[in-house]
Image 1 (cartoon, rainbow, N blue to C red):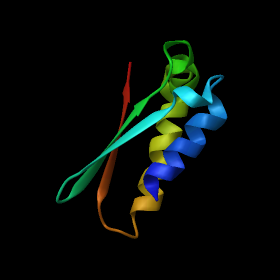
Image 2 (image 1 turned 45 degrees about the vertical axis):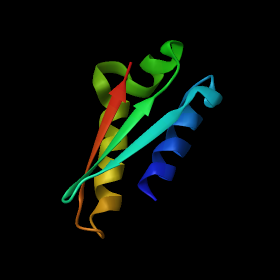
Image 3 (image 1 turned 180 degrees about the vertical axis):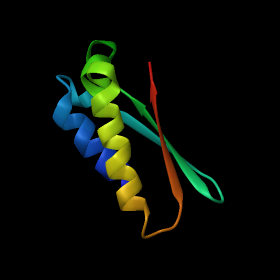
Image 4 (image 1 turned 135 degrees about the vertical axis):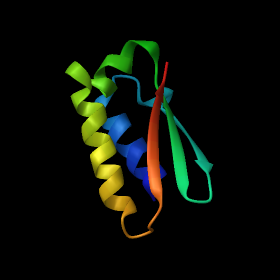
Length: 77
């Protein structure tokens, strides 16, 4: 669910939607989502002063409250 959400948001933001990859690493108490986009689009996903990245993380934490797990979003370059 959360992986699909990140893919949808990232593809909506970038110029090259085919370059969006999300890798999900499941832990016992947390889940790590690694977001990889094209080098030209990294600024679009992070935003000025990290505002877009923070907004994506806020949406993820809100969607994760029902599962009780902690979700971490890492943006890889």
